[in-house]
Image (cartoon, rainbow, N blue to C red; front, top):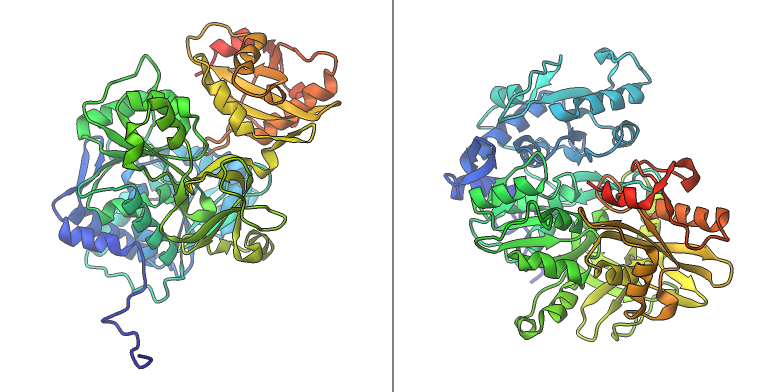
Length: 584
């Protein structure tokens, strides 16, 4: 057996870029991209990506050079997921919701040679580049990297910046260009920066192999069939769209691109294009449940959701509209989803409430992982499969990142003991399905008892007036810590008092788990990826405990502008009734 070796006939490095070449040949006349009035077939998309990749080579792009892009879910953003690695470079998609300083930090840390910028975010890019080069004059000559302007493909803007334009590169490129083969599947394909909410953003590097295996794994476990119509409600800048940027090409599906994610746009796209699949964080569910925009679907639409543990009550509401939910759990370091709640047919016979509770679990490992476990973080021993004993989720396998770019210390710490340590606390049910209970740092320890903030949030979400909830630890002189709930009300809901909400919880959980304080906000502060800024809320809760120790039922709350703040005292105070009505 040992004389049987690898050769070109029986071995090829794995890369998701290969999905495009196949799509262009096998699904050539199928529609690949829809964006407003713009339509491309897979044959056209393959040619456009070849042209763009060949043009990139004229910028002296070499292997492992970083190419950044600041753009929403538009055709160019999709094409760059193939064109950049086809040119031998590494794609860095930047979160469009970040501030100029963070964008500048990412450009500096990544060492990007090129920056593609959509017209809508050109001012943001200019501000970031001026910060990067220390020049406030706006002089283009001071920019330390080449900027390429992306105009809107459907409705061109009136902007005419002094930069090369995207379509010029496509038009000038060679349609017969063939990318050099990937010599090593361990080579990097993309660089994604974490949110950086508590520290400088970390660059997560994906390999061609990891991206390829993660893509196939998700297509199988989400049961994405032939000719799927995929709606881009999930940002492509987020973990490369959970790898569905490459995955839809593998199935010869249609990418329905959207510049703006609003309820009317989502429902309109579903109706006009026959959408079959979409991904979304639970925050999108609140948009879809807006009574003013709510629609009953003519046929089911599959949603893969993740990003935050959705309460069972919210899943039940969204499924009543005709959406079929699959719950997943993951992170940037895991190339997107790492656990998926695979559905068993026997659960269809359960009452809707029990089905929703099961669906709220994060589930079992994706196929691209070698193993996933929940362990005691001190002993590294697996926890009991009893649905109660909490431990940390750890992962290992081909879809886990290569490591953090230029940060060996953080990489070593993350891979301690031969596992990737997620920092998320969970339980394992007797059937082997994992359910997240908290971030390791978010567990509330009250009187020696561990309280899961996610459990308290799930109860609060059952109240019909609640739109968003976040529960954090608040210092307590007697118990050490106690739960503090920050909530926002649904649009149009009448006032809700702290006493009413605590009373609502009293019959649904143990007394020691009850929120000792409720703070009403117009909207909860979020990161650029839509995650609630719990670190900020913890600071505010600490401020309440420190500066108002004799007023546990304080009804006046900070007015948010969604900017980081170390203390509630930095904000003006407004009546919570006004704030509740001011939600978007």
